[in-house]
Length: 194
Figure 1 (tube, rainbow, N blue to C red):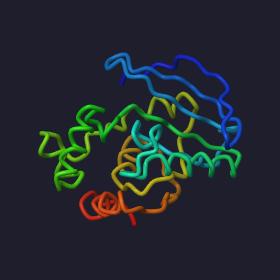
Figure 2: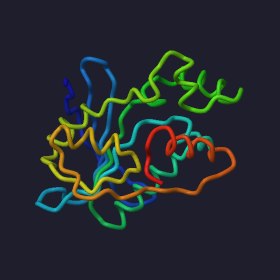
Figure 3: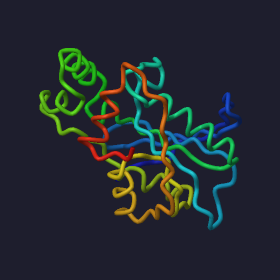
Figure 4: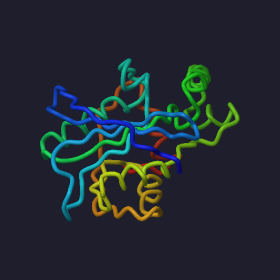
């Protein structure tokens, strides 16, 4: 994995003062970031969210998914604890990219669910790669987490790379009429925790 640290700066937010750290994957050219708050050193596991980019949910406030609200809940919980991190990975649309995500949305508008849409486009249901997390965690000397997730695949991927997940912290948000079936598919077809 060719992840290189680039730079750090302060990032004031509605939830408090974070630091933002840039990382670049020299193979793909993708830029990833870590948001941190507080002192991450020590033996205590770090409260952490590994969040894949969702332009429509994170920035355009789409109600089709729960990505934006999950990111906001993660930032709030870290601020309340005064210590934690978010790895923000540039893996739009479960790794298929923004334009293919829009194509998948069009298929969903015609009746496909999120998994079926990806498959109809010729992709696996989830192409995200968590290997790039390891060098980012190593940069901060982090080896154990309290992981904010509902996705057992993410837990397994981090555990397989030697990151100890001491606790799984579920991260649920309110369903709405636009994402109810999306959330059900994540549980029924992708094995996410309720």
